[in-house]
Image (tube, rainbow, N blue to C red):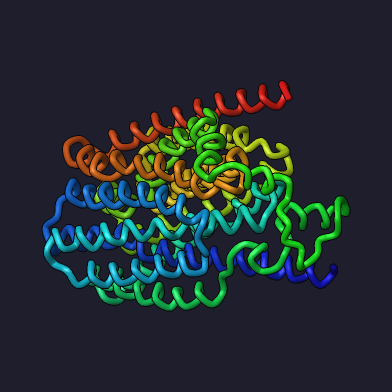
Length: 438
């Protein structure tokens, strides 16, 4: 029994850090475009509206792919699924970097978009099968730091590349090479669910860890109560009953749209915004953008701790408080026109702290509402709403900044943050009422 418990702990830790490293590398071959955009604009004469179209087309297809692949990932082995997606994304990056014609670049970036959707769903499946519902707030927060670690590191990496080579194409070649290496890492490190490895389900393991129920045996693959009930229903019916028929999931999905409006606008456009509006060199802008991601890591970890420990699983309440902070910080950043590098760094860092907390908790909230059997599909639905926001954050921001100015962009972000705050207020109250009724 002790050996089984030790084995379980080993694999939980291994699955966690392996998926984090893998997803960090997906960011290396997705968010490298932001730092390359100023160079592409100068060399190829592409306008901001056209650059925005790249972001919009990529984001929309990625959102659809994330939902479609989320449905597939619930029944696929993460080891093969995630590794294959990363390899194809790396190849697409090499093709993009070697292209000089806009339409061929667009084709490679759309290929990249679709296979990027094979990154998160297998991670969601792994986390929900290896970690219990009571752990998912902080667990998701820890795992979600891979978003900010990946984006922050690719900003740093590409800032160094542009400083040394002054060629935007290397922003795709070097991250692509690292992603190829990461493919072999994922294939060697990842495994499927505990049951496929002769271990008990997470529910049995959790009960044994707490000293209740039957001892967890390494050869015990009998389904738990939730699994037994699920076996009597078709997978499609579970998805309909637990996801599509749940109004709270739809509200959290809609809040994702507004969260990602803020997150992606800063993430994708900060280097160009800082260069044009603040007259900051692009490699310095990369370092400032990195601060946005690094404090995002702190915001995620703090939000996960608050959800599990301080608010006893009430993630919507934590998200509401964070969105209030985000709205106030965005308003101050827009209201006071800072030109100092340090002041811009401080405010972007504060925005990162407040926006990344809700960004990481929505997955945990949705997974808990949906149950682990359809968690990947449910989180994929949330991702579909998240990436629908690129209609605004890509082409929309490019057009607004071209025809108006960056002030109009930030007013839009303040409005989006406020709407996200209102939605979490509604979800918080509805969840509290449901808990009271039960």
